[in-house]
Amino acid sequence: MTVLAPLLSAPGEALVALDFDGTLAPIVPDPTQARALPETAGVLRALAPRVRALAVITGRPALTAVEYGGLRDVPNLTVLGQYGLERWSDGSLLTPPEHPGVAEVRAKLPLLLAKAPEGVAVEDKGHALAVHTRRAAEPDVALERLRSILEALAEKTGLVLEPGRFVLELRPPGMDKGRALTEFAHEVKAGSVLVAGDDLGDLAAFAAADALGIPAVKVCSGSDEVAALAAEADVVVDGPVGVVALLRQLSEEIS
Image (tube, rainbow, N blue to C red; front, top):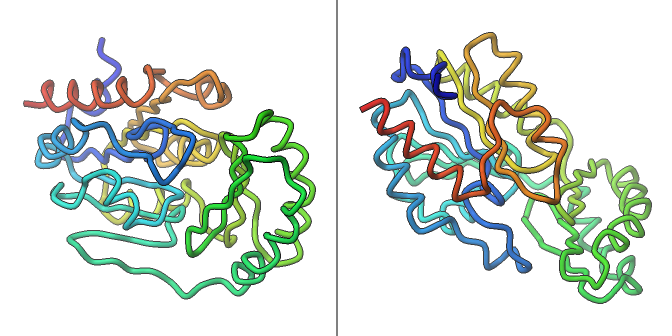
């Protein structure tokens, strides 16, 4: 039996919810250079009319995911950016006011990171700031060295610290991928869900999929860097190439 069977009995009721980095786009040293695989948009365009809804749920700003993914012309697609704080659909973006703690972190990070290992970089996402260590000589060591500093800064500014693949992100509380998935699934009245991710932040989405009370397929975009998600998945595929192949298979089996 195909792993997609829970969706195939009523594909028109299915919600397909996808992470971006590491799931649709390969992880790269410089996050500004990340791009979805070239075939991704075409596969999503073919799948879109065959399911209830498509969603990309990402820590990226919504417009960044749209641009880097080549997703602007994919129908039936909603992008929930910044863990669900932002929403893009049909060319329109909804975004909340900036949390005051973000401005404080933006001002303080340069001084706090002045003696950080070479290669540590800050990504300003507007509603959040991410500290990347992937380009450091010892990224794991750099990450652990910075963790307590950034935890204290997050607590002081009313933000939360979100760990990821060689990244620590300071962002507003109250929203995560699990809540974003739950609210959107209820909104579109999904009868089943496929959720795909690659990182620790996707654990909340996996847990939410299980809690929805509808058939669910949890897909891990596998890597050597994160094992925790694979343990919770129904299927582990070979990175973004495997995710896109599975989406193509779903589209073909529906048709």
